[in-house]
Amino acid sequence: MTRVLVVDDHTVIRRGIQSILRAWPEWEIAGEAADGEEAIQLTTNVRPDIVLMDISMPRMGGLEATRAIRKVCPEVKILLLTLHDSLEWVEIALQAGARGYLLKSDTEGELVRALNVVAGNGIYVSPSLDADRVKKIIVDMGSTA
Image (tube, rainbow, N blue to C red; front, side, top):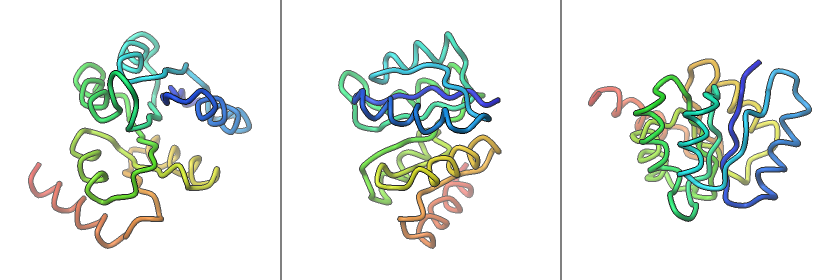
């Protein structure tokens, strides 16, 4: 069973995601947080397999929290969930250590697909984004790593 920590500053989003994931027996909710600071603390305490995290949150956003989590818990995979549909954000997110980038406008099925890809050590980027440009970002990142 894969344990997921859900991080978003909107309670209805957190509860909606949890409701979706409860329908799938392979996913377990490890907890929830309302901002990046809480996400770091909970990740350190409960050691989820995946953190599903919003980018834009008060106190500490998802990108800063991603960088911090990757330092203290490098084994934890991070899937960012966001409204930002810009490839510049995708590049920043992947450079920060995220393993996935899912848009809030994507479907429930896409959420599960994204989690499966990230859980399987893949890199996931929303299909709504330009696939050729996403591949170029990933290739370019690999050549500079």
